[in-house]
Length: 289
Image (spheres, rainbow, N blue to C red):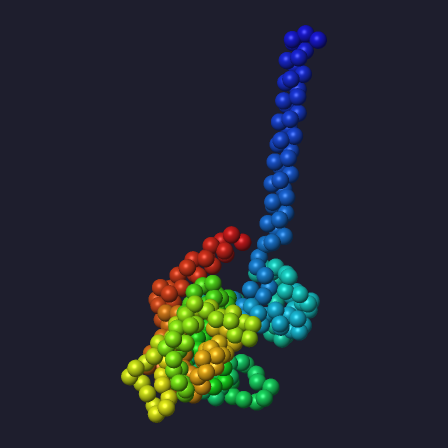
């Protein structure tokens, strides 16, 4: 075979390889396009949460109970993406479009429970809402005998964001306790503690020197996670009996002078200043859909 034939064969080989490369690239683009179509929209639980009717966790529970339909079919799993083209009903009622995100500060009284319905018939915080309030969800919970700041929002996705320990929202409490206070024991939980097999993150405890009521003393307690009855369990671990528990701040939002049972909306400007990263992240996620 002469040099001319070798050159011709080499050109043909390069042309074939180039064609294969273009075909491979086209196939990859087609696969990415199909993937984008498959994941178009947003998860149904997130859609329900953003509408303000419930948290994402509650949305998954409602789906499991058969209370949600999409395009006339009862949904049995939250593993579904939906778009504005889908017709969604909850408890037979059409899902409303998401409203502008709003947040309220509520001074929860002791003797109320943070739930919509209580099987034991105890009064709930949502029964205490003024009639003009839209449907809202709570940011976390306060137990029956705990009072103080409870944040409410019409945006379930925001509620979930604020609850996550990874987002570093500190919870501040004033705790009236009965018992012998040992400063060294209070300091022992500063790096975290394990109680009954449950690990609690660092807890900051200060003694309020100006506040004493007989044998009772007041402590200032700061936690990060807000696990179930966390402050009460830590006080019990320290051999202190809680006689009153008040949450005075959640992240940048204070209870302030809000009267017991009072409710006040957080101004939009304050929301943007305090939750700017959340809103920026949402805008980015929405534009990527």
